[in-house]
Structures are given as structure tokens and as C-alpha cells.
Length: 383
Image (cartoon, rainbow, N blue to C red):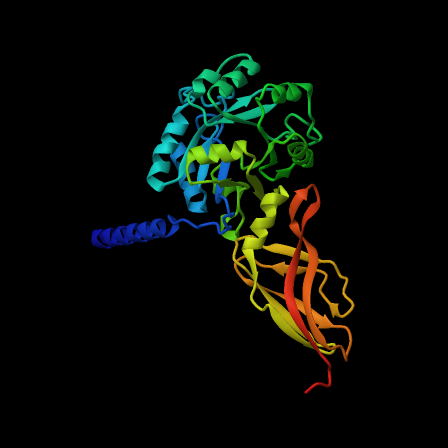
């Protein structure tokens, strides 16, 4: 191969590589509707970098989140666990500073945080919206949390059923958590961490009026843990903020205005899940005709990136409905309606009660809802 051919091949390879980079370096928005009184921001508040036990430089964390369509992240490197200290200085604010600079260039909100890493109890806790993470580097975990509170931090309990501290994966509430709650040093709990869902934490958030959270706790490059090309997504917090800013996110967290979004499931309070679902779907055919024992199809548009599974209550003297209806993300689903009798005549306003099976208001308790449409019933022999 001549030098000219080698140079041409190298130039071609560089063009291809630059084209691939330009193609890949794109943002994929996550389509989930806003609420009447809040923007729906997609956030991950538990992220690690090489400044603790992560494997990624901080600015890459901002790039990953921007590409995935996130609005905000918190960098939460460990305070006490510093396995790379022989290679990098223990600089508790540095990872946030690096990530924030790139986040600002991409209009991604980056929040300063730290993970207070202690044995159980109380376990690991994240403090976010810190002013100076170095001040949390103290021997006593109570003093670390008191300092976080003095800085106005939002504090939440990480992975309460983590098998590294709970061998059976069972989340347990300890007297130390009562102490934190009494002192105002516990504001939320991770209901989901990575791929783990903790039903106990879900109930505690409801019973103790705490914020529900769902975070990736990512250490590897995001593409190693989640198959992005197959549509897999890291767990996220949907935060309903008055505006797109760090201050508004902080206020929304303290007001418990969140929904967990993980593995195709939404977990949260009914006051948020109900309008999310109602604003995601719309009936395109509000009136259908059924002749005798024939069938018709109600078309339902799902404008969100969440596939919903609706299960009707099968009780109607004149009509038959399917046991389950899938409303695929970003597409139109069909709800089949069949007649029971050949000679039934009349117009019915149907309020089809049921539940959205992948929206949970309590553990294993789906969101009740109803589909509304009109059915014109016609005798089978009517021309």
C-alpha cells in the first residue's frame, strides 16, 4: 500500500469517526407530560465518578445525562470511601465542579452532593444541594448530617435493602432513623435503587410523609449497565418543579412532588400519577358503533414515552371488553368493544372503570382510572 493510499484511508477513517461521533452526540428527549402546576423534570440524584469509586470522569456524567434526555443530575461521590486516593486527591467538591462546567454548556442542571457512607444503621445517605462537601468529612455521622442540614441540604436514605448491609435484601427501619426523622435530617428514601425496588421504603414514604426517590447509583459508564440501544433506561425521578432551575427542584423535593420512574413503572402518590396518566392519553374515537354481537375499536393515543397497561373491570350488561389493553408509548392502541346481544339498540355513554397496572399508588396497588367514550348499539339486522 502506498503512502498516498495510507493517507487517504486514514483521512476516510477520520471522516467516518467524526460522522459517527456527530451522529451519536445527540439528545433523545423523554416525553412525559407536565402537570397543571409543574414542569416534569427528569432527574438522577445518585451518581458516582472517579473521585470516589466510579469509573467515569465527571464531565462524561453530564454528557451521558444530556444525551438520555435528563434535565438534572446530582454528583454524589462518597465522603468516606475513596478507593482511588492514590491516583486522585481526595477533593470532595471537585467532581461537582468539573461536571457542572460541562452541564452548563449543555444546559443540564448539575447539583452538588455527597454520599455519607456508614454501616447500618443508619446506612448510606445522600445529601444534595450542598455548599461545601468537605465539611461533611468528619468522624461522627450525626455531625456530618447536622452539617448537611446547616447547609440547607436535602437528605435521603440510599438503597435501604442493599444486600451489602442487609443480606436478605429486606429494608429495615432502625431507631437511628427515628432519630434522624425527629431531627429533620431525613427527607426522603430511595424506593428504587438501580434495579431494586423496596416495597417497605415505598410504604415508609407514605406513612412518614417522606419524598419517594429512584436513582441509578451509577458507577460504570451508563452504557455498560443499561442497554440503551434496546430502549432500556436508568431509573429516574420525575420532579414536578415550578420552573427549570436547581432552586425549583430543591423546593419540589422538600414538597414531596416526585414520582419514581423505573423499569417501565411509575410509583408515586395518586395526586401526581392521576394527572400524569390523564395528560398522556387521549381517546381519538370518542364515539363508536357496534352492530349486534359485532365489534368496534376505540383508538387511544399515548403521547408519552411510557407504555401503559390498562385492565378494565369486566362488568357490563351489553358490552364485552378485553381483559387487558396495552397503550404503547408514542403510538395508538386499540380497545376492542363487542356487543353481547343481537337486537340491542341505543346510545351508551361508557365510563369503563379499571386500573393502570404499571402505575402504583401503594405496593402492588395500581392506579384506578376510567376510560370514557360513547357506544351506539344497533340491531344486527339494521341496514
